[in-house]
Amino acid sequence: MNREKKSEFIRKSILNAAGVLFTQNGFEKTKVDDIAKKADLSKATFYAYFKSKDELLDTMLLLQLKEVNSDVKKLIDEHIGKRNCFIAICKMFVEVSRKNPVCYRRMLDYFGISYDSSTPKLYQSILEEARTLNNTLYDAMKKYGLTKLFDENSPDKAVFYLWTSVTGIISIAQRKGALINALYGISGDEFLNFAFTQLYKSATNEE
Image (tube, rainbow, N blue to C red):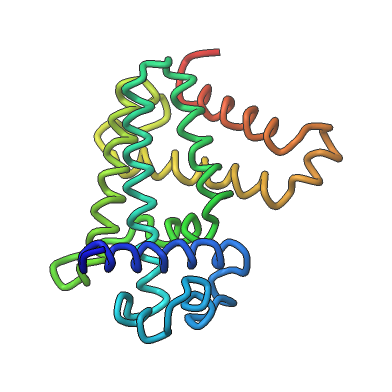
């Protein structure tokens, strides 16, 4: 294995180890020592690749955003119909929240933050990727006529409404799943389907 491939292998090993531990134990409870041990590396090697645990998480977030951007564009290009596309995009964020909850929460922290030339490069990359995602979502909303409640001249406002609505629904399903089942006799996934469908209807004239 040449030096470049070895370096990439080590970097991926750290990212993968951190992903497992963050999901199992949470970000705060996971120590750099734990990540290095999980990756079968020394603590010094960890710091040769990442300055801190926060930088590692932000790197994971950047990769997650790129994956989400790619997946959203694929869904839009599949021409599966506007309702199906809308609900599939919403469910994509549900899957991110389940498979990578720490990154998902970090994504929410970055939403709406501005930046300039003095912002560190990694943070700029994250915010630029988030901006690309916002634009992709807004273009999809315009394409499929999901602008009933939105100002078409304000992409940020439109996507902010969509984003806060979707994340709010996901949060309720995750935190109050047992209550929803007790009150209405439906599962968390059934609640999500219902709520996303109602959100879709609120943005269109479709019944």
